[in-house]
Length: 275
Image (cartoon, rainbow, N blue to C red; front, side, top):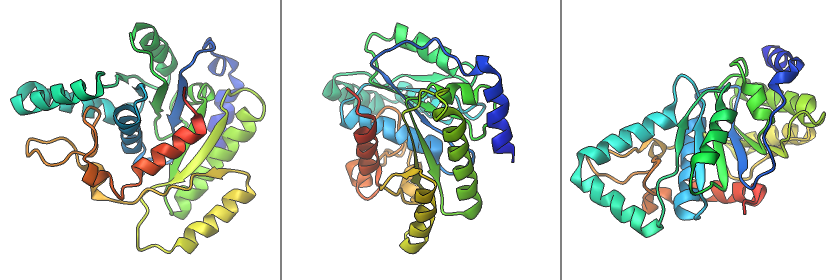
């Protein structure tokens, strides 16, 4: 299978695995999957937002999902709206005054340059991040993906209750664990799967059956399941409705309720244990 071949091909090139990353306090966290289109970038942005604006952690995002760069594009659109609107300017000033810090940095990168760009960001930022999130491409075939993933402290992988998605996700997780984590070639402490785009009409028994198989493989699944909801696409807009997906403003509390993002982010924190 191409997942296996991609891991082994990049693994065999030792220069793609080695890194000069030194011991430091920040935690590298990647949201990565072998299957695109299941909300990986959205979840990255939402988790970063909640932890930065609500929980008080300092975070940074390396957007290496080339060529889409969805998170970086969202930041650019929000910045443009703020620059062109007195209302949003005032809203931003009020927000920054309340949280007493700036918006988290979003660095546009790619899977090959992500680690170097992260190092440059860490050197240049006056306020050092506690957590650096990496939004990875939706395929292992992109150059540098395995190299970057091997330097993550933790990897979180989304999946939906579709047989093809589950099979692809499990193959990716098992291959990364068996070829890199257990051999010591990756510094990753934990790889955790999580359910996203969950349809409330689906029976929990389906997920339980999948999780029985996952448990037999020795893989971990987060207890929080993220629903399939239109609110996840509620960006900042000139209509001034409540915002949910943002890289600058906190989520509207009414939209946060029932989204699972609070529980999801808290579960991540309990695993990675940032300072």
